Image (cartoon, rainbow, N blue to C red; front, side, top):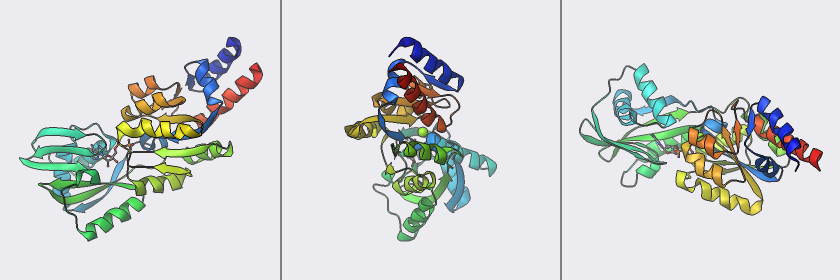
Amino acid sequence: ATPTALMVGTGRSAKMGILIKNGEVLEAVNDVKTVVFDKTGTITVGKPEVTDIVGDEKSVLTYATGLEQSSEHPLASAIVKKAENEKISVPKVSNFQAIEGKGVEALVDGKKAFVGNDKLLADVEIDDKLKQQVIELQEQAKTVVFVGVENKVVGLIAIQDAPKDTSREAIADLKARGLKTVMLTGDNQLVAEAIAEQVGIDQVIADVLPSDKADHVKALQQDGKVAFVGDGINDAPALTVADVGIAMGSGTDIAIESGGIVLVKNDLRDVDKALALSKKTFNRIK
Ligand code: ADP
Ligand code: MG
C-alpha cells in the first residue's frame, strides 16, 4: 500500500466523521467477514427509560433508586430518573457493591437489597405468575430487572432502550455486502432477540459477561476477520481483540482508545462507509 493513497483515503474519511487510526486498520477492514455489535449505546440509543413497574410502585422505586444512586450503568440512570420524576425520597444506603454484568447490592434502610438480572437470583424464589410477566416484558424488547429485599423479590422494573433510527438501514447495508452480522450483549436472550429482529441482525449471543465478550470475538474469528463495534468500558477487550475495533464517538474514553476506527457521528451507517472507503482506497493502490 502506498502511503499517499492511504493518506488520501483516511483524510477524506476524517471529513466524513470516520477517524481511521492507521493504514493497517484500513487494510483489515477490506477482509472483514463478520461484523459484531454491542447492543446498548451501539445498536440502541443508549438512553433507556422505565416503562413498567410490577409490585408496589413506591416501595419498588425507593429500594431501586437507593441501590442505583452510586451505579454508573445506563439502567441505573433510567431508574434514578424515574424515581426523581415520581418524587421518591432516597433512602439511606451503605455497603454498595456493583456486580459486573449482574446488578448491584447494598444495605438499604439497614436491609440487604439488590437490583439486577436473574443471575442474582440464585437463592431467591419467584412464583410462576411473576416469571410469566418477566417473559412477556422481555418479548416486548424490555430489559427486566428484579428488585429484591432480604431474599424476596418485591418487584420488577422494565426498561426500554429503542434502536437508533439508522440501525436497521446500517445492518441491511452490511448484509447486502455479504457480511454476517452478530449482536453480542450482556442483556437477556429474549430482549436481545427482540431488538435483533427489529434491526435485522442475523445472530444473537446474549447473557454474556463483560469478561467473556473478547472470547466470543475470538471464536467468531474462526470464520474470518471480525470487526467489533462498541461503546462501553466492557467493550474495550473485544475492541482490542477484533481485527477491526470500531468505537462509537459517544463511547467511553477507554472504548475510543481501544478502537482502530472511531465513528464521530455515532451513526452505524458509517461502518458500511468505512468498508466502502477501504475498498476504494485499496483498488486504487493495486
Ligand atoms: P450490555 O452488554 O448491554 O452493556 P452489561 O454487561 O453492562 O450489558 O449488563 C448486563 C445486564 O446486567 C443488564 O442487562 C442488567 O440485567 C444487569 N445489570 C448490570 N448492571 C446493572 C445495574 N446497575 N442495575 C441493574 N441491572 C444491572
Ligand atoms: Mg454498550
